[in-house]
Image (tube, rainbow, N blue to C red; front, side, top):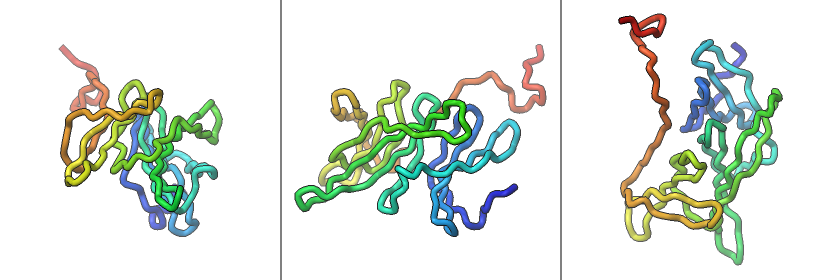
Length: 182
């Protein structure tokens, strides 16, 4: 294996797509963000994919998630307008297009929205986020509608939200051939 594990810092999010785990990492020696993957079926690591040059900026925080079985990068940053900081979050989707080096396309940007964290996405691609409520310590899960640019609360309050996707399966883990015998 040609993976420099001692110099990698794995970010706190990972995504599983088609039986492959994807991580966003930061290489401490080269100062580069890269994607690493591990195929659960073959139990092998894939080739490292360099972070897109147009997304690499040291003033940003990154997370990964998925929309409809496609990897997405969430790029949190701020811009200064009229001497005030304006928070932004860009959502970029990875397109493979059958090539060895995938490309990324920007899906949308949250403008002037304080997002504690992006929790995930609905099946229709609408992002679900955790936003801190004014004057309180708890956040609320909210859904952003990109077409109307509206944010709607889901009425779910708390802190440290996490979400993961699942796929129903009839696979039996304690049977080596994964077949149901009658």
